[in-house]
Image 1 (cartoon, rainbow, N blue to C red):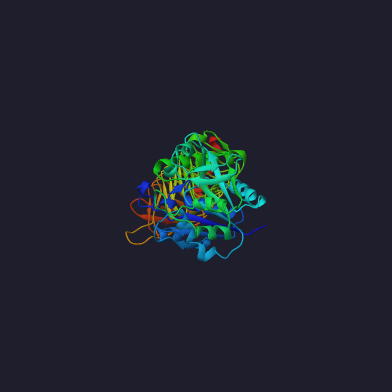
Image 2 (image 1 turned 90 degrees about the vertical axis):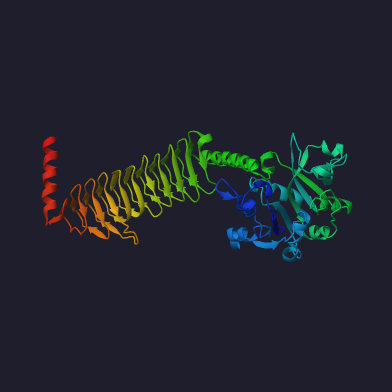
Amino acid sequence: MLERLAVILAAGQGKRMKSKLYKVLHPVCGKPMVGHVLDTVREIGVSRSVVVVGHGAEAVQSYLGPSAEYALQAEQLGTGHAVKQAKDLLGQEKGTTIVICGDTPLITAETLEGLVQLHESRGAAATILTAELDDPKGYGRVIRDASGAVLKIVEQKDCSPEEDAVREINTGTYCFDNAKLFAALDKVTNTNAQQEYYLTDVIGILHGEGEQVEAYLTDDVSESIGVNDRVALSVAEGYMRERIVRKHMLNGVTVIDPSSTYIGSEVVIGSDTVLYPNTWLHGQTQIGEDCVIGPQAEIQNTIIHSGATVKHSVLNEAEVGSSTSVGPFAYLRPGAKLGEHVKIGDFVEVKNATIGDHSKVSHLSYVGDAKVGTNVNIGCGAITVNYDGYNKSITEIEDDAFIGSNVNLIAPIKIGKGAYVVAGSTVTHAVPDNDLAIARPRQENKAGYADKIRARAKAKKKRSE
């Protein structure tokens, strides 16, 4: 197989976006457009990818990093001029070069693979990815001869009336024999309405030299969408969102209402998970099997293990253990890590805290900068007072402890294993294992008294049963 190379055109300023953000960095389903394009060409085995940058070069390079090579187009003099900037990097290579725009996030690996295979099987010098549109206005037309062979591409502004009526359009994605591409680029001129060096002129040059030129017609018109303004960005978002949701449903995920479900391009979801309406899944989120997510859940960069439930809640950079329930109306902030069979109830906020297996924070509580053990109960309205205006401090609550309602735990502090903290207490000193802490006007530790309280409570429950 011939070596596969790629040139990604990402030098345009994108004035029609009317944005401070460089055009190809606008996200579609959570990932910048140029990131989609680079990932797609790499998926079909491209060994070297050169991104041609201009306006916003530093921002693009900062995002893509070492995953690509870069060529600078200091002046935007047309697509042919842009591709020519990659000559120093790729001009001596032998193989097949894909040329693709960085603002075409919807193109798929399957389509690119079909384009390359047709190109290589026919021994073509160039192959154009084309589509047929009912309204081709604004696109370059693919002009064929009577036998159907490709003659040239004519830009909209340079079309004759007959050429303007052609419905087959150039999508802006091509395959070239690498050596023939750069040789032809040296012959491109700017004698056209825009006074630019068109990459499309390479097609006519190669045809005139007797080279084979092919066209690969995609059956999915959406893949041809190039994003030049916010309207097109919205259209691309809609197509990709539909594609992503469909993929997850075919993989065994139940999506109750696809039209109100938003799933980022890099989200992973296990089979038999159910997504209820108005669920938003962003970033590197991973969800296991047999989970129930939503309704009204917004989850970003979070790991949710199998069997968990999240309802009416916001989770960001958190981890939820298996068979754990979150919500309704909970907020898990960065660093929240929940064990298995944990309950996080309504209006509970957890930040930078680990909560052990079988523990409960059922309602109206804040747990921040804390280490909570297993089988701990944190009552309604209890909070860890973790900030003194300058520093954050840690609260530790060990296994089997019971924190009563409306308790303030003034960090740094440690609540021992099996200890009780009485409702309404503001606790400023450590509570040893199995002690009972009462701090209503003041704190009092009763050594070993927790066992008596526990026995009394068990006896009461037994009598009621």
